[in-house]
Image (cartoon, rainbow, N blue to C red):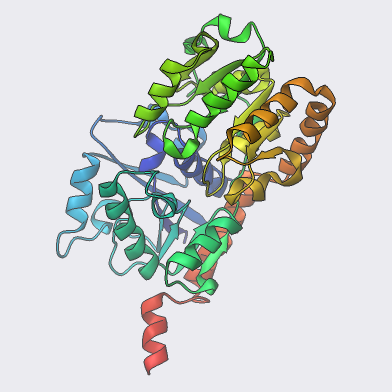
Length: 396
């Protein structure tokens, strides 16, 4: 009889972001394994059916069960914290529950695995509003305390977790994300004729930034560095792709005051086909984030042979290594030098294209899924115990 694994699939249905990508691709990868498991993918949305947002490889797979509830996210969270509530009322019987997002819903009596993507809300008060930091911080603390295993995407996030939470190293598994989704054939959920990006964007060379617009992405300094190289006579444009996030006021002021505002193109969220075109047409990707738990745009660019400039710290340094131009993300001059070098040095770009493809060639979602499945087996076979059991054993 198949083992039923519950996965929080709500993030997969939200606007494009790294956690949404992770949730979808992990499910696809797990279903591709030749293992006797079924996935119970539970979702809740106020907008009705979400089947058209889910790739056919997931929604039509015989071992995939999508649980749809027309319910606002806040209402679901409120229900789950009511005394006596059990998530199994929604999912049906499951042997294990995997939380993939920041809203970790309790599920009494079922072993749990938690993915902690990053600890940005703890690293700096600049990155989020105080209410968000407090709320998410408490959720993560509770989830980490009760989870049998914790999955993180990088050694950097593992170190952050060990430094900031009372968690045993033996309960953490480092499982990097895949990136081969950018090399896969487009699917029916993509709409290449509805990209909304003017042709003029592609008519001249440009540097590309991909990601949600929010303080951690360091876009104010990106704009300042871009302005600096333009003043030095370096001909290039800047394209910013991604949805508006939170605390964007400083970015919007910097954009409005940029002397080369007419050479900065905001294209917002785009379809998968358009995003690939933006990557592959770019001179380079600039991603000098102030903090990352992984940095998916870095490996997405590298996998497609696009040179990258990124930060010399946190997970981006770890995943890019010597195969990208590294800069100090708090130093505009350092960022400007990196941008200028990528625009002017064709030999460097050619080297980074080849190196990036080599480095990312093993980062497949099936590998991520296989390692995650092995974590499931550890829990299901009792090879690792939840903290509550460990505590009882220690005091016995």
